[in-house]
Image 1 (tube, rainbow, N blue to C red):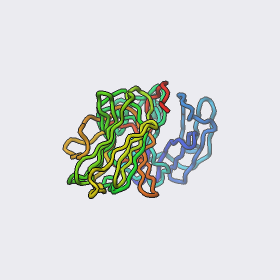
Image 2: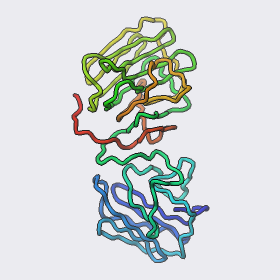
Image 3: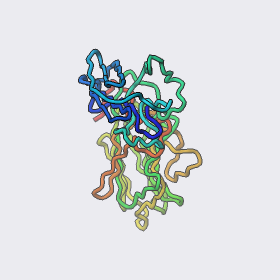
Image 4: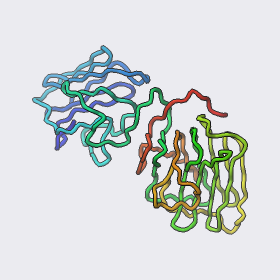
Amino acid sequence: LSSKNQMDFAVLRLVNGHTVLAADLGKGIASVTSSRRVNDGNWHTVRTEVNRRSVSISTGGASDSTPMKGNQLDVESRVYVGGFPHTYTAKRINGSSSFPGCIRSVALNNAALDLNRPETKHHITSCFSSDQQGAYFNGTGHAVLMPNGYKVGSDWTFSMEFRTSHSDAVLLGISSAKVDAVGLELVSGQVLVVFNVNNGAGRVTARSSGHFLCDGRWHSLTAKKTKHAMSLVIDRKHYNTPNPYPQSTSAETNNPIYVGGFPAGVKQNCLSLTTPFRGCLRNLHLIKSHLNHFLDFSSAHTLTGVLPHSCPASNRQSHR
């Protein structure tokens, strides 16, 4: 909750596993931190109160409060739950990250808020009974990173882990307005990972073989291109392909990075599929020279059909 001039506000945040309530009624900020941790994967009931004398927070029977001064909380009628829009600038509210978890039974002054009928929503999906690290792609969209363009160049490595039960899907696409591009995709049949590269002279392909990958388990993937070769490593199994065009060694890409799919109308020169990925991805890294760039979905330019902080847990073990 915040006023138009953002002088008066009340915000409930999660910091280092503790809930923190901060408020300002126009005469200075008062803040109180719960003594009980709540980042244990269990449901917790949190009750907060802001009045002219104090701010207080109660978590599972443990109550904490601190004095404050002011008259009334003069705020707008809009309530943000779980985070702020990208266009919203919270000048006096620390912490801009969205809440990476589940919220239910929200009430304001004893009036229930219907979270199923918000005025607007962004990146909200079903709550998993149990989750784990990673980003969940629901099979309808994609993520867009580095919207100003990314150059693959001569020597480049991409690594990640994926988990899916579905074949035929885009994993990664980086292209140019001409022919230069790289692409990674899952292709049905034996369910292969296919790595395509075009340095300008023609498409070159490396593909995995020999084991089933769409089994709902975590698999590791590393795709690497150098001037004269390209390789795939899937769960420590290596697949290599030489570059038959020695005069063409650099992929001069300049378009955004698309993960898990790409929008209709976008050209991808090294992908044969348009099917979006359905499953979980984690630990995505781009490596060029000595630079290791982690792809953080929480700071993606566009997320469609992607839950960036959580994926449904599986009791199946990963292949190692």
